[in-house]
Length: 330
Image (cartoon, rainbow, N blue to C red; front, side, top):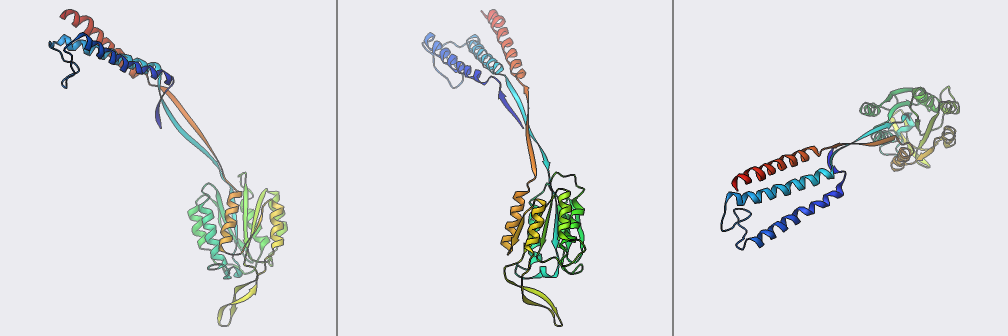
């Protein structure tokens, strides 16, 4: 953006001499002409009006204009062009989402899985500078979306996640290992895994703490989230009459999830409803901030030459009129 500033702005105060000189000139003209009066057709009017009479006033106006222009030139006007440059240092984040059958429990609205997907979508949308990926796990694990900055694609793939797409169970170690495999070779200074589950590790060939040790080796922080209400919840159960919901005890291995988080430098959170789950993601969002560095640049360029040129031209015209025309008319 271009702005005009004055290097010697204080000198503009001398511009007050221009109206003072004009007032003095008007006063002197009034004293020297008894019949002086201000007319709507021109600045001055008297009993005898000749071209030389008007020319004298024009010459004074030109001299005042030159003075005003010289004051502006000495004040040194400059054009200032300011702009900003930003550098962003994003974070690489992989979300490991439990899609086991128990994630269909209805202690969240509409169920744990859909609530988790909705909150995760908001989280992704709030972090435009980060590369984010998605892995899912139950009895097995796979990558739903590798690390990407194309968050629209990521959100669409997240919406497609459903329970039952892979063998049922809760293989926390395998799920964590899959997420580690997706982020371990990242060049980002900050690497984060958000692991969300609602149960106890009961499947998989990889011990969760072994996976946590690997994460620590690669400098990956793991934030763990246990989802599920306190006490009992309505769980889906397959019966001869189809899926029925039954009240069952909520079991989350909070000790294990806490150990994983502590070992890797992350944190463990417990979410018991939709609101607390949103709050958990909000806390993680505050803890893991992208680095955005903004620098302001400015470029100054002197622009007094047009003012100086105008002053020189007017002064030359004034001298020509004063010493040539006035002399010839005298």
